[in-house]
Image 1: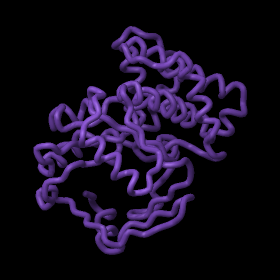
Image 2 (image 1 turned 180 degrees about the vertical axis):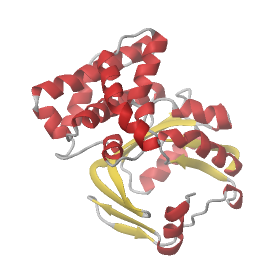
Image 3 (image 1 turned 90 degrees about the horizontal axis):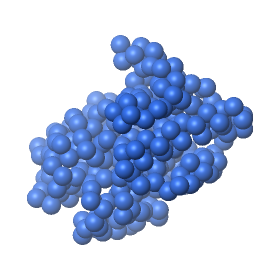
Image 4 (image 1 turned 180 degrees about the horizontal axis):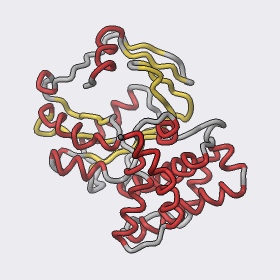
Length: 280
């Protein structure tokens, strides 16, 4: 499903992807904006922004068969719960992906960095037949890095810790990851943000590895020079961003848990005026 100019482009010209792994075009895109025109499907993948999850999940519900499921791949840690509240836990998977890509124009995607990675499982971490079939489908489509984590909530928080800190510090400094890591001051800021998120996760009984911050920093070290987060790019372009679902979520969840998060509070406060202006 798609809407607006994207839907029109997909229907008329197909989907164009420029990728570091090889460019391609999919001409036969069966795109629609009417979920009732689609027959029952096994899996619905949500590729929308975090603030659009509830609306997208409601649109997906008419397409689900008795064993069908919705797989949210949003940044943040709250999407699976939002989907489950809409379509039910029995029809919800937990998932995440990693790739550095951007929309050049409607129907045109640029994959500029990072090997495609996807991870998903049932909410309770018990691998099911539909999860196995989905893993085979991704592998058959050429996604070689497919994981089925036994603790899907911890997997979400591992990504959340990295992408939220990267997005927050990048948004405030307007700098790419190589510049952030090179300067001692911004590197410390990045590590401090990660440490706060790790403490928040543990306060919420999420089992993260003791070295999760070091692992997160090591992952960012592998990013291509010039890499920025999608949240940072949206903020710089004056577009609505996922601030409330990343840095804002850290601040909100930390207050609920009684955990201190001064670095993330600063990052959120510094970026909030830009977010408010974009949404106005």
